[in-house]
Amino acid sequence: MSKKFRPGVILQVPIDNNTHTYARILTDRNIAFYDYRTAEEITNLKDIISAKILFIICVNETFKNSWEVKGDLELEPSLRRNPLMFICAPYTEDYKIYDNGEIRRNATKEECMGLERVVAWSPERVEGRLLDHYNGHENEWVEAYKIK
Image (cartoon, rainbow, N blue to C red; front, side):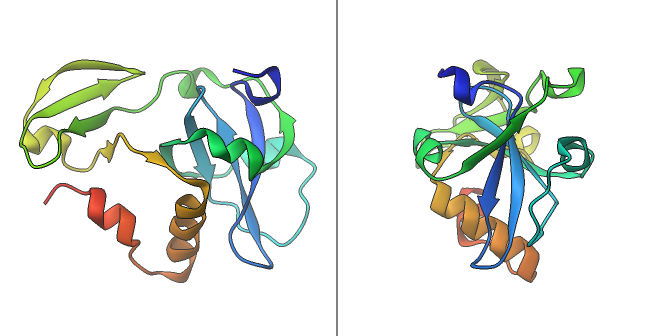
C-alpha cells in the first residue's frame, strides 16, 4: 500500500454536487464511512473521527483516484480490527465468515444475516449508497448484496 493511502488516512468523499462526508482507511481496502455530511471544509480531523461510523466496507483501488486525502490520524484500537463480514459463492448457500482479512470458518445463513458481504465496492456505488442513506432511500446494491 502506498504510504499516502495507509491505515488512518482520512478521505473526503463526495455525496452530491454540494456536500461530502469523510471516510478513513482501515486496511488496504477496508474503509470506514462517517456520518458527517457537510458542505464545509472540515480541518479538525478529530471532529470527523468522533462522528458515528455508518458502515465499513471493502472498496476497490480506484478510490485512490476519486477521493481526496485530507489528513492522517493513528487508528484507535477499536478500529484496528475490522468487523466480521461474510462471503457466499453465487447461487449457493456456502456461507463463510470473513474476519480481519481472512476466511475463518464455515457459517450458517443466520450467522451471516446483518453482516456486510465481502464485495469490492466502486467509489461511484459507495457515493450512491451515501446519497441514498442521506435521502432516506434503500440502496439497490445494499439490497442486492443482502442475504434473502
